[in-house]
Amino acid sequence: YAAVLTSATLKSLGNFNTLQRETGVPSSAHFLSVAGAFNYAEAATVRVPPGAVEGNSIEEHSKYIVDNLESMVEDKAGTLVLFSSKRQMEQVFDELPNHLAKIILIQGQYSNREMVRLHKERIDQGKTSVLLGLASFAEGVDLPGDYCKHVVIAKLPFAVPDDPLHEALSEWIEGKGGNSFFDISLPIASLRLIQACGRLLRTESDTGTVSILDKRLITKRYGTQLLDALPPFRRELG
Image 1 (cartoon, rainbow, N blue to C red):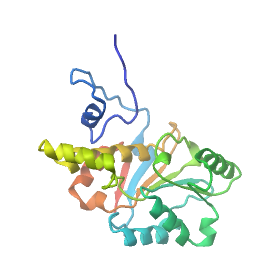
Image 2 (image 1 turned 30 degrees about the vertical axis):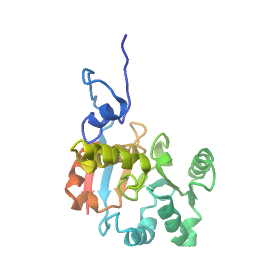
Image 3 (image 1 turned 45 degrees about the vertical axis):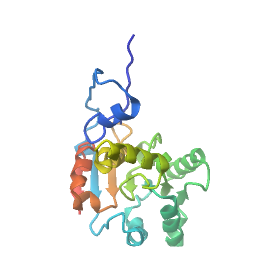
C-alpha cells in the first residue's frame, strides 16, 4: 500500500524535519517540494515597517500597533490583522480611535464564519473592512481578491513558553541534548508564519502586502532563517 500526504505548509525552515518528528513519518519516506503557481515576487511584498519594535517588548509593541495600524488599512478593501495573543489583540482594539474601531471586526465579537461573511459583505458594498484575529484566522481562511489586500502579522508566532505541551516537549528535547529553541520553537514559528502569510495570495491574480510588525525578523540571527523559509516575495525590511 502507499499513502500520499500533501499540503502547502509541510515544510518548516526549508525542510521536513519538524513534520517527521511530529507525525512519526519514517525516514524511508520520500519528500518532494513542488514550486507553486504564483509569481510571488511580482504579486506581493513582505515588509517590516520602519520604526517597528521587537515583539517581546510588549507595551512598546502594542503602542506601535495602535499608533500605526490606521496607515496600514487598505481603502475599500480588506485587511487581516493576526495576533498571537488574545490579550494584546483586545488591548490594541480598546485603544484604537473610534473611527477606526467602527470598521473593525474582532474575533470573539461573532463566530468566525459570521465575521468572514460580514467582512465580505462590506467589501462587496465598496466599503473598508478590517479583521482582527488569532491563530484560527491564520490558517484555513479564504479571502481572495479585494477581500484581503494586506495581511498584518503583529508579532512572530512563537509558542507561549508556559504551554504545558510545549514545555514538556522542550524538556524532552533538552534531555536528549538538543536545543529546544532551535529544535522546536523556531521551526513551529516558521510553520505558523508561512501559514499566516498564506492568507494573502489565494488565486493567481491576487496581489498585496504582508507586514510583519516585529523587528526581531531583522535584528535576530534567526530572522534570516524565517524570511528565507517564506515564499519569495519582494522584501522591504525596515
